[in-house]
Image (cartoon, rainbow, N blue to C red):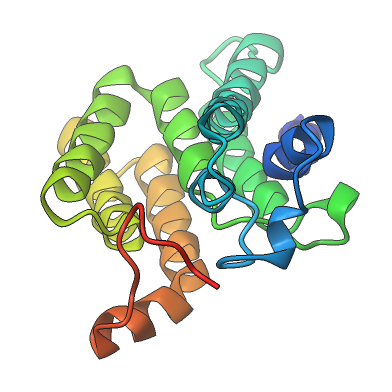
Length: 200
C-alpha cells in the first residue's frame, strides 16, 4: 500500500502546471527563458499574472491532492502515517523530476506548500506566513523559499516531535535547498534578482 501511494503521488507530481498552463495560454515553454525553471515565479516573467496564478494554484493543489488521496484511500485500521509521509515526498520528487516532461521539473516550492497544507493546516499556514514575510521585506523569491523550506521541519517538530511527518518535511526541505543551489550561489554573490525584475 505504501509503494502504491508513493507511485500515485509521483505521477500526480509529474504534471507540471507551468508547462501545461503555458501551452494552453500559448506562452513560451518556461524551461526556455528566465531562470529556466517551470514554476510560477518564472511564468510571471512573461507578464501574464493569470498564468502565474494558475501555475501556483495547480502546483499547490497537486501537493495537497497527493496527501489527501494517501490519507483517504490508503487508510487501514490505523492512520496511514507511513503512506502519507511517502506520498508527501514522492509528489515533490515527481514535480522536480517529472515523468511526463522528460524529468525536467521545477524546484517544488508551491507543491511543498500544498503538501504541508495537506499534512497539517497550521504547519502550512506557518510556512506560508514565513514565506510572505520574507518576500514582503526583501522581495527575493528564492530566499523566501529557502527560509520557508527550512522552517517547515521546525514547525513539524514543534507539533509532532520525532514523527514520520517530521522526517518527511525534513527530507522535502533538503530537496528544496538542493534544487536552489544555483540561487544560493547567486545570493552569496549578491546577483540574485528581486521579484519584478526582468531577466534576459
